[in-house]
Length: 319
Image 1 (cartoon, rainbow, N blue to C red):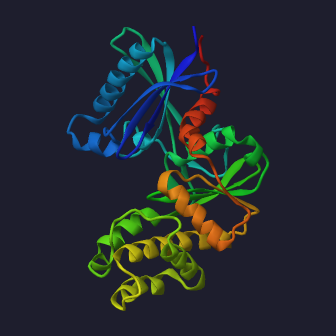
Image 2 (image 1 turned 135 degrees about the horizontal axis):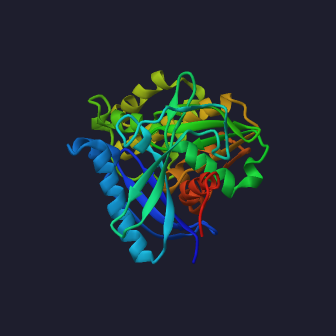
Image 3 (image 1 turned 180 degrees about the vertical axis):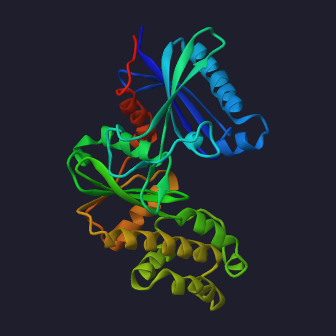
């Protein structure tokens, strides 16, 4: 019998559960739904009961589909938040990249198949002024997948997204981190009265000269006085709506990377997927960040699973 476990990434807007081969880290089968923590909290069903029911229903289906038996389920993300299943306090930095410094809580979950699994909820991390839940598990997984880049290296790991996280890693520990609301700010600004008439929501090409112009502008001037230039360039006929859209994106990503460069890390590792990977690659090329590298989408996709697998090593796993 293959050893298997369940890997659950339970975010604010999504729920993702996978059956994973514990010996290889390969995903056997998975399901992704919109049963995120926010939706569960709004549904009105008592919190602990709703979370137990959703996880049990999906676990029963996936295990039956895969023909596997699992004794453990690792859950990271917002399930351990105030809105989630059980609130866990944030662990403090520095936190080992083994995951051993994270706070855990075990819950026994019976399934309709007659067996029960041990559900292990994983906490997030905090500094004196910042918090995160979920990204710490990605970092643990990426360090496992790329030990040659992370082991005893001083790096700044950048996890782009709605709330980009910049994790300072040294001596195999997450020693500090900062949050940049790059994606959320972009979405809000594009809908604000001042900029909305100038913006087209078309896809931004990394080769766009206006995106690269925005990146360069971010290096030469602070963000706040640069933002109105999006409107001014459009009104003066120097950029159409699609070009203004690209310019705004370049300004925000360039501003984020400008702050990253100020950290003077020996190496930068950027874990971006999809369209963001191309944009961040174009931005680091424009800036000339020769000590930065973009991780492959395949390994970023595996990061949470391998983070859970590494955390699983802290607990007994029966055959």
